[in-house]
Image 1 (cartoon, helix red, strand yellow):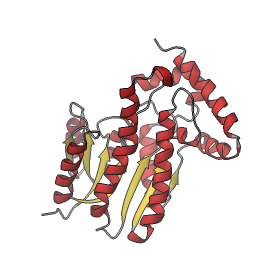
Image 2 (tube, one colour):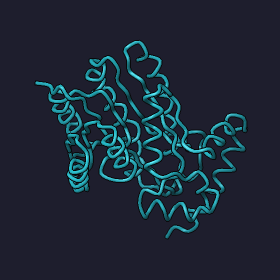
Image 3 (cartoon, one colour):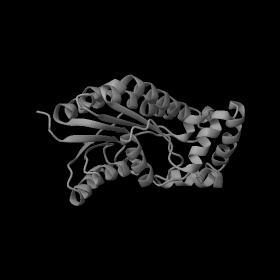
Image 4 (cartoon, one colour):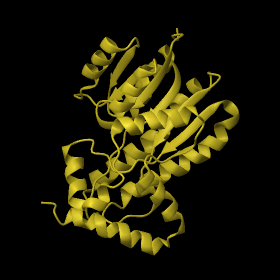
Length: 266
């Protein structure tokens, strides 16, 4: 029997922006289903959240890139819980010469950023549309605005997320589903990400916003019916600037900054 309570599903919920989304939902009195990798701190986060806020937090630990685990876990979730909000936050990137990037790393980005987001949405939509109003947040990146050398696959994957989200929003509008795509700038989610940003220099950190700021803004704007969400003035400036700059100029300008990062890699 499906619970009468409504739940928000958050992927990549064990750290960084995903953790911030869990907290932001709890602060609004929303029950949460956290999806994270085995070995993450998800259960500890869930216990801490429930000790502070009067919400229910459920934890599912599995690898989203494992198709069978994804299907079986989502079937179990939809049979038990009423889902009215999906936050597709899980994703990965990296900086390296495409020539020297391992095939497994390329495949992982495509599987997690594109395939998993698409399948999560497809499998949870039947539950979402049973509600009078429901919501989907898909996390893209300002990297989606232009191709970038030394990242190549990552901005392409986030460009897919942007296109997918905006197309789906039009398709789902008459079914009461608000689909929003968020374009965060740089986020210091862990020591590895922080180190990469610092190596790129000051320009790379101008659009930096905290995970709490991004999560709260994304939820508020989505609930208000905004389909395109760009956190931070500098990032919004870049969003409009890239609409007018020729592609060759954009690629060269941004790629020079990113190249500084790989020059410092071991």
